[in-house]
Image (cartoon, rainbow, N blue to C red; front, side, top):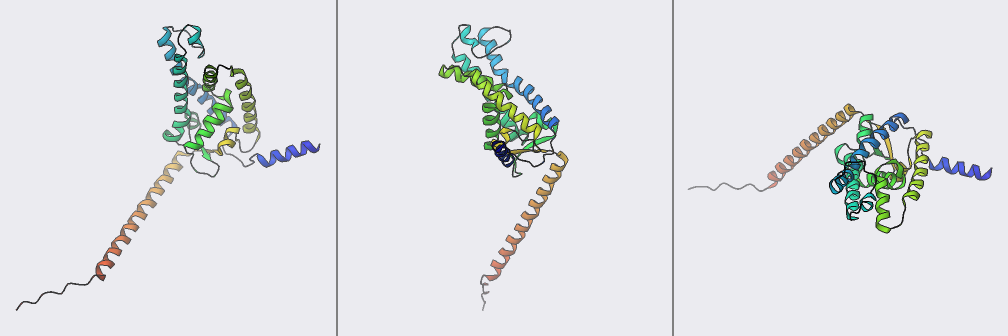
Amino acid sequence: MGVLYKAYTWYQGKIDQTTCDVEFSKRFLSYVVDWGLGGIFTGLPAVLTYGAVTGKSDMFSDLYVFQALGFDKSWAYVAGIGTILFALFYYIYIPWKVYPGQTLGKRLMGFRILKTDGNAVDLKTLILRQFVGLMLLESIALVVSNYLSQLVTLTFMVYVDDVWSVIGSILFVLSTMLVAGTPSHRAIHDYIAKTKLELYDKNKEIKKEEETSVKEQVNREKKHRQTKQQGKKMANRLPKKKSSSHI
């Protein structure tokens, strides 16, 4: 009983108990959208490379298929690296530059990712959350993780796919339990990157941007007036030239 109590106390101390306004259903639907769209987009380089190299139009299976059909292993790297670049664009670049804090799924569901201090996410935060947390650790969460494990296997000639999948499955289940069972709805990748979720009100954000723009304009005008006044004071301090007398 003592061990269980200590474990429970540790759990209460480590898990964020603050309330999140994003419902579990919204987050789940967002994940489904991103898994589907992101998976299709991520797999494009592999499918196109496979078709171009082999001339086949059947279903692409994995990166191992190139060597199995007698083609050079380098084509597997071309396809694999392409999928990773596409995944980085979808899961990191879009929420960094296109829709700040939002993948397409999150934008559709009306919420976004923020840092736990309330500030907007930056590139480092997104790399920790999306790449380290989702792609590497919670590996079954995204299709691109399959290509990552296959690239590791091809590079080091050690089959890691099954171990990677088992560890990723365990972490993904734990993440799902955290999202569904805690008030903050934060997953493991949220704790890694120190992020949280917040409902996104577009009209509210537009109004906020307009208010910020007005404040900046007022500050610029105020600074301009101060500079002008300082210029006048400096001019008044300068000695005046005496007018020359003519005889």
